[in-house]
Every structure is written in structure tokens, then in C-alpha cells.
Image 1 (cartoon, rainbow over the protein chains, first blue to last red):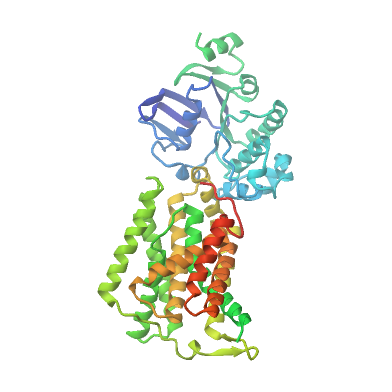
Image 2 (image 1 turned 30 degrees about the vertical axis):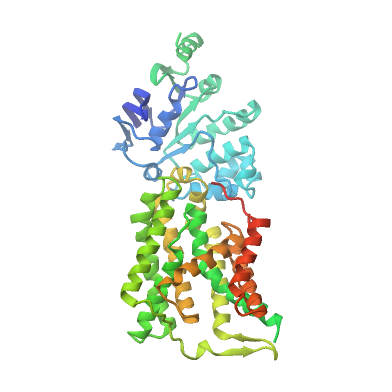
Length: 232
Length: 289
């Protein structure tokens, strides 16, 4: 069953067109990775799905309802949660308060403070620290935990590995099976192709606002990905 | 007749200033809105109280059950109708809107209530006092105002730090776009914050009207005292606002002890000294723009 259907959306920043008729489908329970170089439009796509940007044309359907024009705060109660680029942890709130705010929409499910602390020991250790005083890796773990607190049907992960040490990236990706095993559908954006291929069921590669390659993670060869990634 | 008495009276007066300033502090803290209509809105509340007491013969404290919800309602509508549209059009827009509002309201008050001074009659509580020593006696009403001020600040602080709604308000203050990604409608949160702020203004305005005489233009001085309390205490810190109110109250009372004409002057000088030497206020809290 299709959980998310993005149908031929165009998205603009003022006069600059960032997405050209992007289409994608995410099935219930699968993990789809969007890969591509800087400026390919990956984060813009995530913003459109989360409701931070409105497409000029095309439509976004989630769980059977048209959400194209809904603001982000109305999409969260429907089950869409985004860990934004740059993490956007609330700096004056403690880690635990950040998580509690993540649960603002009161959706129920497998995720609560206890299960988040269980899945992310790093977060549990820091629960009384304010957001301002977290390292990048800690912030990223809290941002994922905070998004999970809304018990989303669809979790959007934007550039999880960006700016983090490889060892920290490993730690964070180690928690991914716990998320997908709980039945959560994941759409992630990643520049690190190896990480993306490791956890994704399917991969879609973007270049300058268009889809240039898509397929299951196993079926794509490295050469195919490399040429799609760089547009050669 | 002593300095100690002046200090005690000043601290108690600080409770009223803190009450007047709490809403200003909250609105700035949550939305970065500087509400220049804050003082005149307190005067509006005083006139509401005056109207109910003088024309409808209510008892002074009973008016609070009408004035507070009425002011909160005005705050909610004001935010949704006027201030939310002004936000996001540059830092100057909300200031100009509240400035214009202050001018309009002041003139409307003059139209309806004339420029004469009025006060809210409270009966014997205005003059009752508790004898402490030969030098010091505390007015029951002053003490009540102080206690209410402390309770309101403590209650607001509890709300912000312990409740779901309060956390959402702080999160919105930190990063409104990220807050929306948590399912928080920041426009509603703003409306709620302004409703709370004006509810407190309602309470403060009625107490102001019970304490002193007021006229439609009394909002200016009220705004300045509230501002001074907020700045002395430190922007965005509620406990700081309480301390700022007390510092201002003590400065004014001690100044008046030196010479009855110096009270407000000394208050302003202390405020300027704080601005010059400790511009972040006594309880400093980083304000991110």
C-alpha cells in the first residue's frame, strides 16, 4: 500500500525553480533514500513533504488524503515528522523537554520517553542538558528522538550524517533498524551513498531538481549511481 | 522616620511594577514584540474596574472576574487580528502597530471618560495597615499587591516550565519553524501568550486604579515603569522582572525619602545606571534575535 505519493511537483524559491516535476512513491513500511549532490533539491523535496514549502504545481497525497497545501503543523497529527536539516534543536530547552515538545501532537504508538532513551543511550545520558550545550552528534540523536516522539507513520530524515564524525554517524545509523522494525516508514535524504545503500530498500537519485535514477538498493551498480550522481 | 521604611514600601511597590511588567516581559520573550500599548491597556483595565464599581456598584475586587477574562479576550483577538499580520514584516511593524493602538485607545478613553482623573473605590482596605515597629507600618493593600505580584510571576514561571502549553510556548520562542514541525501552530501560541499577558495587565490595571488616581494619559508613565522593571531585571527573565520591579520601587521610595519630588527621577537614574553598567539586566539571560 502506498503511504506517500508525490506527483509531479514543481517547487520554487522566488524565481528560482528547485524541483522539476518530481514524482515519488513510498510504500508502507519501506525505506526510500534520496541521494544526490549539493543543490540537487533533496532538502527542498523534504520541505515540501513536511509542509514547510508549498509546490506551485503537482500534488502530495499522504495516507489517501491530499496534503499539498496543508501547513506543517497540521501534517504532524496526520503522522508526518521531519528531522530538519541543521537539526533545529530548541536551544533553551533541555533534551527531555525537546523530546516532550516532539510529542506535542499526542499521537500514541511505540515511542515514548522510555523507549527513546532505550534506543538512544546517548540521548538518555544527556536528558537534563539544554540543547545549546549539545555536540552535533547528540543534537542529531535528539532530533531523531524528538521526531519519533510524535509516533509518525512517515519519518523524514534530512542529511543525518552532515557534519558528523564517521563514528557518530555509525552510532546513529545503528539505531535505524529499531525504527524500521517498529513499522515506521522512512524517507531519508543522504549524501553519503554507502550509508544510504546500507539501510534503504530503494534509492532515488536526484540531479538539479529532477530524478535521474531509481531502483532497489541491490539492483543499482556503483557505476550507475556515480554517473547519475554527477550527471556524467 | 526612616530609610528602612522607605525600602520596605519600595519593595512592596515593586510588586505592582512587576505585575505591570510581567505581560510586557512575556510578549517580548515569546514573540520579540515590544508592546507600546501595554501601559494604556493597563489603564483600559483600570477604567473597566472604575466603570463596574462607580456605575454598577460592584465591589472593587469582584471586578477582576470580569476584567481579567475581558482583557485576555482582547489580547487573543488583538494578536490574531492585528499583531500576527504585522509579524514577519520587519521588526518595526509590530512596534508601529502597538504605538498606533496606544494613541487610538488613549483618545477613545478621553472621548468616553473625559480627561478627568478617576480612581477605583476600595473602601477601608486602602487605609488599613499592619503596625510592625514605631517606624514601619505596612499597608494591607500594598502587601496584597506585592503578594499577588509574586504569585503571578511564580505561577507564570511554573506554567512555562512545567506544562505542555508552556513548553510549546518556549519552543516557539526558540525556533518557530521547528516548533511547527512538532505540530505546534505558532499563531495560536502567540494568541495564547498575548491573552495571558493582557489577562495579567487586566489584574495589574485594576490594582493600579485602586492604588492611585488615573487619567486616559496615565498609560505613558505606566509603560515606562513597566519597561524599566523589565530592563533592570533582564529581558526575557520573569524572576528578573520581579527583581527589576523591586529595584525600581525601592529607588523611587528612597528617592522620595530624600526629597518628595525626587522619587521618579531617582528611579529613572537607577534605570539609566543599569543600562550603562549592566545592559543585560541583573538576571541576565541571553536574548537571541
